[in-house]
Amino acid sequence: MAFLLACIIIVVSSIAVRQSKVLDRQLIFFPSSEITQTPADVGLHFEDVSFTASDGTRLHGWFVPGAGDHTLLWFHGNAGNIGNRVDNLLLFNRRLGVNIFIFDYRGYGRSEGSPSERGMYMDADAALEYLRSRGDIDLNNLILFGRSLGCAVAVEMAARYPAKALILESPFTSVDAMARRIRPLLMWFVPPRWIVGSRFDSLAKIGGIQSPVMILHGSRDDIVPIDMAQDMFDAANEPKRFYAIQGASHNDTYLVGGERYFAALKEFIESMPLSSSKEE
Image 1 (cartoon, rainbow, N blue to C red):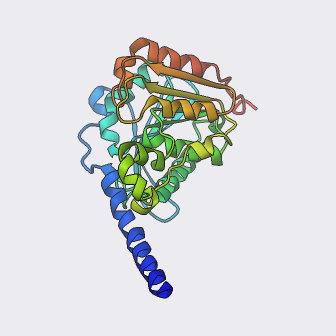
Image 2 (cartoon, one colour):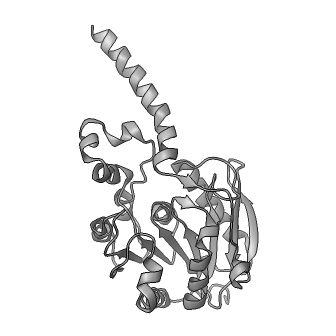
Image 3 (cartoon, rainbow, N blue to C red):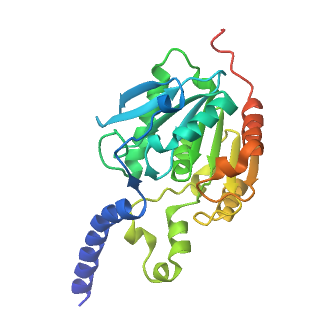
């Protein structure tokens, strides 16, 4: 009887692992392949960039030069592609003056492959390698910026590599925590790890990050509750800042936030002294 039960558990677990990869794509990742807008459509100068992850996956991104010396590596959220962020890019370019490198994870936009947590980290590594290969920017002045799901990727990169600063907008603590909030009754009977394969456990990682941290979150976010951002902030090391975007939900932060939102970001970025390594 015990042997039969063990066999059943093994079979069910195997099915759950395989199914979790499918459910990841149904519950977490919502990529689109068609890029409907580029920075040129809003008058922004940019470079169209192709680069390769360590497993050979070809990736696509845009480098938008700014007036300042800081460079923002942008990790976008779980839906659409970089083409859906063009208006946001324009405002960041005009209001913050930073160089911006934004790219699509595997399976998004013109990037090859299929999305996964491990794959996204590989893509982020490749994006950093691309920036390192450029001769016109100083990685000592690199700021990691994540929004929503991209926060988890930014946190992982900040845990691996030193950065001038880490900015997280609308972060969640982990996939497990999100699943328990969205489907509390179901999660009582079925652990989240049986349903989805991704963990994206940012809360467990942020305490090990030494870079200055800024966390922003909409006060009316009905997708990721603001208390998750507060949990992330509480776990982060000093120096750190928290900025609640009053009246903003999950996807309209930079629109609802307006001048105060950009002023808060600019103040934080300008509080980071520039590296003088290029002059040395």
